[in-house]
Length: 341
Image (cartoon, rainbow, N blue to C red):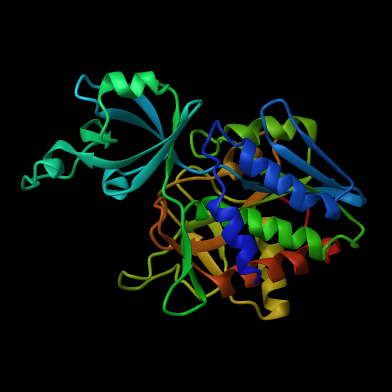
């Protein structure tokens, strides 16, 4: 696995609604492997490898969760609004950077109880969270701070005690982006027509995937995303190091059985471990894709993460490599796809 590339993808800034930096990076990475690249009106990055046969859509969302400035208290505390599914407890203690047209401002995420060293009797809500920059309201306003600006959470990327365990921010879904980039490199000579779509605003409503479909109209789709590991619980079903995860069901979607069987058969042929994910929580871009344009057979394949939706998400490099190998096998055997619903 190319750890340096994964690191670069992880560290690049790109929360929902402000994806230009990460989109530019992925566009540059994909250019050698496809025939055409364009950004649609909604901001999705569409990379098309021309070919024959049914059109396959492979999608991964390129944006990440984040924080946006909501307002400044008279005391100078900056109030913020979550972008995506952020639990307040997961960001308390984080360092943030505000980028204004007058320079960079650093701050920390805290609450008044923590600032005053008071005993916490309950988990804080987002309304309790604020950013402490050490500046007054007047000083912040003078330096260009205002509502609607993005807060950049501290960025770092490391390997843990084992080099197979990587840890960093935005792993949801930069892991999926890494898989598509690497897959495009390996599949540049196959004859199959493929659309690699890096979607926007998945974290706030699955919006980019829905709009992207109308310019492509694929025959089937595989969304490459991450899911939460449960290997710190009794009887885990999604463990790090045990292979990619195929989502059969989530809170809002039942995946297409034919596409699932296609993937399971490929895993069996190549002896790639595969974990089956049946969940009552969350959903992905596959939901909006599957109910667009009269219905598109869709499923979700990805890897499990510990500490999902934090800046310290943990993934296993072998799961990522196995996911790439599995998709490569699937795409090289498109004739084995069963079209029956």
